[in-house]
Image: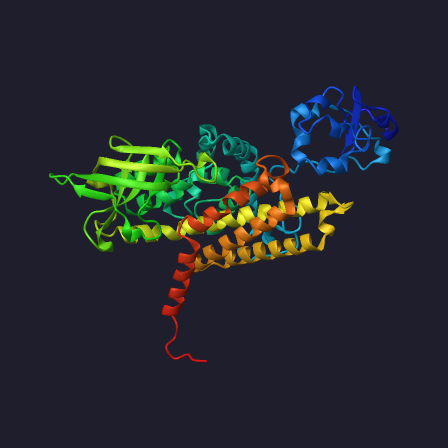
Amino acid sequence: MSNLREISLEEVAKHNKDDDLWIVVDTLVYDLSKFYKLHPGGMAVLLDNKIAGQDATTAFFSLHRTEVLHKPAYKRLVVGQLPKSSSKGQQFLPPKEDEVSKVPYGEAMWLSPGFHSPYFNDGHRKFQKAVRGFMRSVVLPDALACEENGKRASQTVLDALAEKNIIAMRFGPGPHLKGLTLMDGTVTPETFDFFHESILTYELGRMGTRGYFDGLLAGGVIGLPPVLNYAPKELKERVTKEVFSAKKFICLAITEAFAGSDVAGLQTTAILSEDKKEWIISGTKKWITNGTYADYFTTACRTGQGDDTSLTVILIPRGDGVDTKAIKTSYSSTAGTAFVTFDRARVPVENTLGPVGKGLKVILQNFNHERWMMNCISAGSMRLVVEECLKWSNQRYVFGKPLASQPVIRHKLAAMIARVESVQAWLENLAGQIALLKMYITRCGQQTAEDAAQVFGGRSLTQTGMGRVIENYRRTAAFDAILGGVEDVLGDLGVRQAVKKMPPNVRL
């Protein structure tokens, strides 16, 4: 728009009628003469004497997100710009796709100028820049669409993830990355670490589309590790290749209507056939992420009677005897949450993951990485919410002043900032306290969701527009408090582990 003609505010002021209506937003002059009748907010808003023929920048940003201005339909309405001699030019340009936020506390400290981290180096910063650019340009448009329409992530996006080997990286560092080109060579398999993985998950969380995050193969992140760790070589290589290439999908099928955190209470059974070559599996699983479109189900089954030693994990392919039905939950159906029924499904014994009767170990070993992933997504989502609230409180005017001029709002912002910074610090320093961190981070998330709703007011109840991020977060923050182990159970687990390690000779 560098060749736009210059138009003075005095000239704009002459165009203030319903059939001749101009306004200024961020130094650009818009001709709304034909548009105002189509305005979603009605004609009266635009015909107000403080808007029509006036610089409406402050009013606009009290009602709309910056991204609205950059939609092609609205860019076509631009007819000029204010003289360069009397303005500073456009101030509210959209950020570059790989740009970090300049909002205070809008990013983790290690991404902020002047701060140093012992955990993140220049290689991590280069990786973060590449990941953010990819997420914003390739993934975010699909995320916003699928979050609304409830469809599975598009195959185009999944193929792009596979091309960059992002799917493989989501399982953390390890031999499964050997020989792969990661993010166009931004990082090597040998140097890829858990901080790189945390960046990847964190950036997914910053999209503000919680259902889509789970739909973007989160079920695979928790469903494939037992295959990587326990499957026979041929099965592992085949399934891993299919999953990493986004040709097939896998999920973890543990939870039942009969048993959630009480894994030992599972009732799905697996009985050996007479020739001992197949498992015959019957039972149901509930709230299975990605289950509606999964090709494989990493399934916990009871292969004996009584105690924990009767559990076995089996990889069940979709086929005869396997049926899935979508479950409607608080977040988008794009997550593919399913009720799964096994009706005498027959599976080769070679699909057994780990020793028969040792399934509890396989299940519990898998939980920590799942909780690590959830902590990272929670931290990223919370950080985005803090950034949104700081922006909104600065641009929203009430009683003639910015919202941030209200002490009660500043108090809420202070609490939100303190929570997200403490969460980030614990996440970076994590060395085994995964259960307690998950309890803490999910409670912080729910408190932040409530504070954010108060900051945004009625806009926090709408799924589009200014409050879409806050509405999504408030509606879905409780998911992380439940999935992967409810926070109260995990808090109790953390304390019981601490009590076990209490020295016998300490007293007050």
